[in-house]
Amino acid sequence: MAESKYQMNRIMVQGHNIFRKYGKVQALSDISFEVMEGEIFGVIGPDGAGKTTLFRILTTLLLADQGQAMVNGFDVVEDYTSIRKKIGYMPGKFSLYQDLTVQENLDFFATVFNTTIEENYHLIRDIYVQLEPFKSRRAGALSGGMKQKLALCCALIHKPEILFLDEPTTGVDPVSRREFWEMLGKLKAQGITIIVSTPYMDEAEKCDRIALIQGGSFIQIDTPENIKDGYANPLYAVSSESMYALLKDLRSCERVKSCYPFGDAHHVTFFDDSFTSEDLEKFLQSKGHNDNNISKIRPTIEDCFMNLSSPGDAS
Amino acid sequence: MTVIQADKLTKRFGKFTAVDHISFEVKKGEIFGFLGANGAGKTTAMRMLCGLSKASSGLGRVAGFDIQKESEKIKKVIGYMSQKFSLYEDLTVRENIRLYAGIYGIPEKEISPKTDLLLENLGFSSEKNTLVKALPLGWKQKLSFSVAIFHDPVIVFLDEPTGGVDPSTRRQFWELIYDASQRGITVFVTTHYMDEAEYCDRVSIMVDGRIDAMDSPTNLKKQFQSPSMDGVFQQLARKAKRQAD
Image 1 (tube, each protein chain N blue to C red):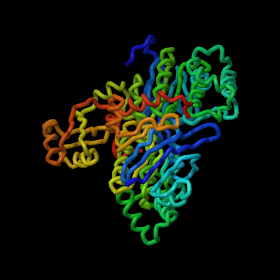
Image 2: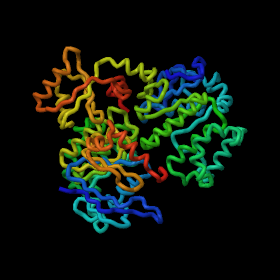
Image 3: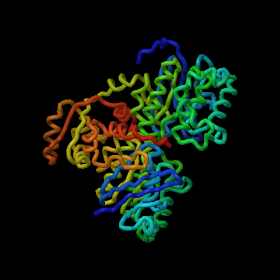
Image 4: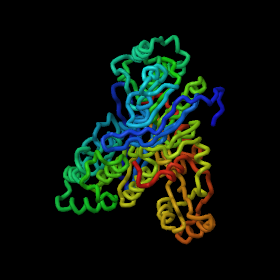
C-alpha cells in the first residue's frame, strides 16, 4: 500500500454481504469489503459487472435487497442524510445542469451544500483553472473532457471526506486518462478517500487497493502487487514475425494452458513446469516460426483478471 | 490493391478546421488503426470516408468510388459498427441479422443458411431467438461486428468497438477482426486501448486534425524510441493545442 501521512486505520466505507437484483438479474451478490481512510480504492471490471449498482447503494441512491453498508460511520439506510453531506459523487453519466453555465453549476452545488466556491477553492483550484476560460459557457456546450472536469469540481466543492467516482475515464483517450489520475493523486494527498470504478485494467495500478468485479461478485480484493504476486503459473511473453499464426499454433500446443494476445506479445502459461521455454521454442520452430522471442514476465492486472474470472461468465 | 485513398482531405466547420489535409492509403485486407485523442478529428474523417459527410476540400476514394460524388455506392460496399449504436434491442438475434441482410440486399434464399453458419461460428445458435437487449455486452459487440460484415463488405469501419468490454471478450473480438482481415476484408478501426494498436498492420495518429505519424507499430516504436504504443501516443497527443472533446 502506498505511504500516506494519513493513518490507514479508520474504516471509511464498509459493505457487508450486499445483494441486489433487478427483476431476474442478480446485479450484486454477496459483496463485502472495507475502504480505509485516505485510500484510493478501485472497483475494476467490465460494463454490466455491477459497478454502478454498488456505487448507487453506497451513495444512498438505491436500496440493497440484503446486507449492510456503512459510509463514514453512518448506515446507508438509517443515516442517509448524514452521508450525503460527507460524500461527493460523480455519476458515470453526465448529470449536471446542461443549460446552466460552468460558473452557475458550481455555484449551485456550493449553495446546496451551504458553502461557497471561495471557501473550498483550494480543493478545486488545479482543475478549475483549466475550466476558467469557459466559465460563462453552458455546461451542455462543453467538450467531454471539460464536462468531466466540471463534474469533478462540483463533486468536490463541499469538501467531501469521501469521493465516489463512477467510471470517470470511460471513453476518454489515454492522455486525458493519465491527467485525470494525476488529479486523483493530488486529491488523495489532501486526505480525501476515493472510491473509483473503471473498465480499464491498467488504471488498477494507480490504486492502493482494488476489487476485481465480474458478474456481480468481487472475485478478489487486494493491493495490485499482491494480486500479481498471487498469479499461480509462470507467465511468458511470446512474439514472432507472424503474430496471428503464432496465436493459432500456440493454442494448438497441448502443453499450453492459456494464450491471450497482449499487444505486441502473446501471454502464455503451461499446464506444468516440466514444459520449459526451450521446449516451446522447439515446438514453435517445428511449426515454422523462427525469430521467436520468449521471455518470462510479471503478470499485469489484466492477466490476473482473466485468470480469476470464469470464462463462461464473461459479461 | 488500394481500397482507401485520401488526398489532402479537409473538413471545416465555419472557421474551425476539424480535419486538416490528411493523406493516406489503406490496402486490401489491411488492419488500419486510426488513433487520436478525443477531438483530434477521427470521427469527422471517418464520416467523410463513409459518405456521411461532405469534404470541404481534397479527394477521397473508398472501394474505388469517389467520396464526394458516389457516396451512395460506397455505403453499399462498406460495413460500419460503433460502440454506441449497433443493433435493435427489441429485435431478436435472428431478426437483427435478417433486417441488416435485407437492407444490404442479400438474396432471400442466402440469408437463412448464412445466418445459421454465422450463429454456429459464434457459438450463438442457442440464442437465435433471444432479444438482443437480454444479451451480455460482449455478445452484443461480437454479434454487431458479425452483422456489420454479413454482406461481405470491402471495408469495415469500427468506431471504438471494444469500449467497456471485459478482457477476454475484447480478445475474442480481435480474433474476429483478424479472421475478417484474412478473408480479405479491410479493417479500419479506432480505439483508446493502446494494446489494440499493436494488433494493427499500420497505425495513424491524428493530432489537431492532422496525421502526425503513420507506420507499423514496430516502426513507430522505433521512430519515437518508445517500448510501447502508449508511449508513442502520449508523445504525440501531448503536443495537441486544440481543446480535447
